[in-house]
Length: 292
Image (cartoon, rainbow, N blue to C red; front, side, top):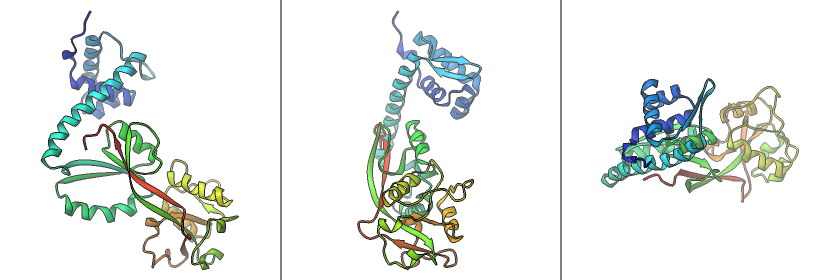
């Protein structure tokens, strides 16, 4: 029996994709701003029209069936295409206007955004920027689920279906207690870190992995200090260094003005590396199907 695909609505596809992402009817309904019975009824109608079960329902949640996984993948493409039609019309009128949601990793957001936002607002007054500070994995998830338009991340960007454009390279500096032997140096080499205790962020931050790579090359010690404490922000690391708990690697924007490297009441000193300095490359990432 043939299927009349014209009976399938975009709303039904949107509800099905939301349910696939949330794995729960209640959470999917909240995302779609409808009641759970409304969402469930639309999904049942979609399943009846298609003649297949998209979801397995149990007391532990909702799971996609094998055919459901394939159909949801195609539904995402359909929704992306319809979004592209709407936004193409809008961007033809004024390319950089309307809402644009941008995810930025926590080790960059507080240092980049104050510098970036004012000129953007001046140049594009009709652009409605919405920033979200998220770890790399969360930015990638939100991009894939179309909850973000783009993200600013450190290269390389994992995953498929994304395009990237390199923005800038950000060198690392060493932040160390003012009375530390390395604080007297004008510039460092990675070899200077050998044997040094370097404080790192908690798991899940890409800055941690970047710093770990530098420390491994330099044979530096990276045990957490103390063992029951994990730093979750650059500012926490800065205060730990000021307390004499070790040194840390900071991206250049987090250091501040080069002529004022001392922070926390002159208890710390930031020292740059000799060229070529260890650095991270920042990039803009977006879905390849995104109309902008």
